[in-house]
Image (cartoon, rainbow, N blue to C red; front, top):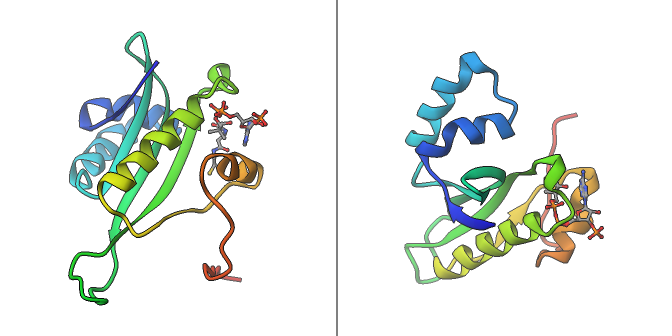
Length: 138
Ligand SMILES: CC(C)(COP(=O)(O)OP(=O)(O)OC[C@H]1O[C@@H](n2cnc3c(N)ncnc32)[C@H](O)[C@@H]1OP(=O)(O)O)[C@@H](O)C(=O)NCCC(=O)NCCS
């Protein structure tokens, strides 16, 4: 298995992992191209087939603290094909994302976990943080 940063050439496989319907794949592909600088898809591949993916949003914070370039990350849409789960693919995707975060000097990386995936993120470098708060519409 290899993990690499994907791109527009992987859009069809990425769309499938997101359950994007066939008639929306072209628009999704356009979205991937338009957001290539900020939404980085990491893909796990076996024999040329994408078996999992995870996205890193690289976003900016307001300049301050002596720096004009303050970026943070947000992990989104982590998905491993069912038949490949529990073999470390998810862990490898997270390791690649956090290596990229370090290389880009991101201030921190957040993730809004699904209910069943909290322990997965805790095991892969994330921790609960009392200063990170969330608002949701009623
Ligand atoms: C969460 C997920 C990405 C983990 O991928 P993976 O390749 O199986 O991950 P790893 O092999 O590195 O780790 C497996 C761990 O994930 C846990 N896991 C398995 N299925 C899971 C599921 N549906 N949801 C959350 N966690 C799950 C397992 O309990 C396992 O923990 P264990 O080692 O204590 O048994 C994968 O299960 C998945 O795609 N789930 C559905 C989508 C999802 O929940 N995504 C995250 C939402 S933010």
